[in-house]
Amino acid sequence: MMAVPGPLGRACRGTDTAGTLLGMPRLITPDVRVWESFLAAVDEAADGGRQPITHDFVQFAADLRADEHTPRRLDLVPQSTWWWVDGPGGSPEYLGRISVRHRLTDRLRRLGGHIGYDVRPSRRREGHATAMLAAVLPFAHGLGIDPALITCDATNLASRRVIERNGGIFSDASDGTLRFWVPTG
Ligand SMILES: CC(C)(COP(=O)(O)OP(=O)(O)OC[C@H]1O[C@@H](n2cnc3c(N)ncnc32)[C@H](O)[C@@H]1OP(=O)(O)O)[C@@H](O)C(=O)NCCC(=O)NCCS
Image: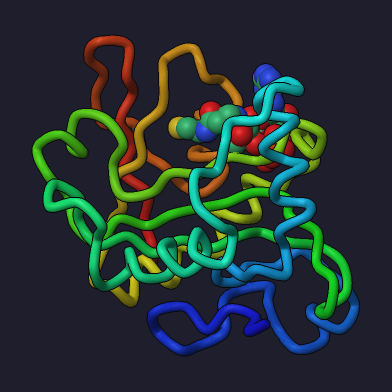
């Protein structure tokens, strides 16, 4: 498994060799070795009724990595995805995921923005989303995104806090969606 090669081929904040050895939370590109805890996280989110992953996990992880260059649907822009994992390098545990869309469409401008994330239910309120977003901002910057647009539901206090803790400046709201600009540099 490669710890944070990412699209720019450089380490991201808070992710270094020591972190990997000590098992500190870090970003990795989608990797099949995380399958067990990833599926457990899917179970948690589905409240016991797992949403089927319609193809095998090796392909699933490969598809996510390929989306960075070749989106599977014509209406999607290139998107880089990382998984936020904890534990030793050889057997990491899945905590959450974060994706950076390389450019905005009219639709993403309204809803979705540049960056989307979630944390598995059993590991929320531990600061992971805040740390994960901070870790990914340099990658967004390297893609020429600055500032990054991040949106959340007006009722999503946790996500709003994550954005604001990362320097997000409120832009506007419509149809129950808040928009923020987050500096990446
Ligand atoms: C939103 C989400 C990513 C937050 O993840 P998290 O790891 O729990 O967030 P953090 O632990 O970094 O918490 C960030 C802040 O939100 C606060 N917070 C967390 N959950 C909260 C909740 N349910 N209600 C109110 N505040 C909450 C935390 O106390 C923290 O505040 P602080 O910085 O003042 O201490 C997570 O709840 C999630 O995955 N939700 C479902 C998917 C989603 O909404 N994604 C975002 C789409 S825009």
